Amino acid sequence: EQSELEARARAVKERFGRRLFIPGHHYQKDEVIQFADATGDSLQLAQLAAKNSEAEYIVFCGVHFMAETADILTSDDQTVILPDLRAGCSMADMADIFQVERAWAALIERFGETIVPLVYVNSTAAIKAFVGRHGGATVTSSNAKKMMAWAFSRNERIFFLPDQHLGRNTAYALGIRLDEMAVWDPHDETLQGADDLDKVKVILWKGHCSVHENFTVRQIEHIRRMKPGIHVIVHPECSWEVVQQADYAGSTKYIIETIRNAPPGTQWAIGTEMNLVNRLKHEHPDKEIVSLNPYMCPCLTMNRIDLPHFVWVLESLEQGAIVNRITVPKDIALEAKEALDRMLSLA
Ligand code: 13P
Ligand code: SF4
Image (tube, rainbow, N blue to C red; front, side, top):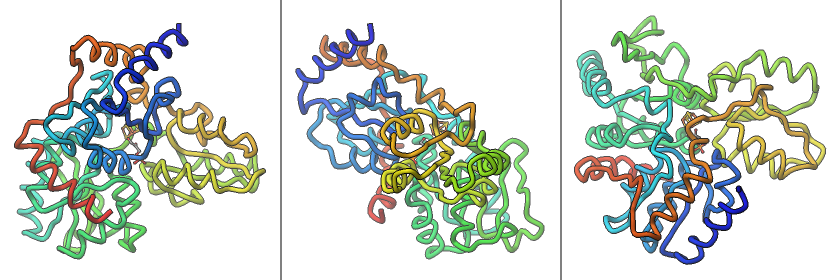
């Protein structure tokens, strides 16, 4: 059954040629990533979308916010398709535009016009538009440090959303102390965690990734006891405590390159999504690779993109039916593009 579906996918791909472009995020399943024309981390996938002007159809193997970003960065006559519309992101779901507008009003009232908003690409297009409108920019895990430095060159404070961990890890790496950071809770609309609000330089949204929160300091201690000398590498969506204990932290692209460049015989514990860890294990039999979390950590929404959905959208296209199209309304797309362009021009 799998090989029959694979043959059908291959046939459609061949018939469409360059009219069809298939980008794939590193967390995607092997059964679909094998058909990707290009793979990448979130930044690379955004750059690819911005550059690709020839493909009529972009079948995005990733999650909803990535497909929205691709739609914003491509022209009107290019169609972006997400094989399963249920492929969302639990982190992006932790901030909606209404909560963000209320937070911003409260923060401006408290701190005056001293804040630059920075939004992780793992967010809705409406929030990116809000950030674009207020002079801010998007960030990804591979350029967050550069983007925070940029934001600090423009004003005194940063409002970072929706991932508190990426925000905290990045600010800390730039020399901001933990007591100079506060957390905005969108549910009770309070600022938490700072004794003196006047000292606050970074305001973090209380959001997180439900996959990466499953990695803990105890796991790092345990694996180091079991395998002395093992290297621990994690994604910066992990908590500050985990990133501090790890040997290395960075985006999916960084993790892949670090493992690729590691000498044979070295041991690695990786704290990121399961499909990527398994792929790295398979591609590097000369190194010992384990998941930092023994139960592995799948991203359930990334995994919604499977071969049956993929073949369904491709074959529908052939029959002249566009299913699961992702379209960002024009007014939102224009402002969101401002936030994305500020990042892409610096990256
Ligand atoms: P990167 O590939 O940019 O590191 O992003 C990780 C991620 O969680 C995407 O949802
Ligand atoms: Fe969202 Fe986390 Fe899945 Fe990435 S890994 S798509 S941040 S839930």
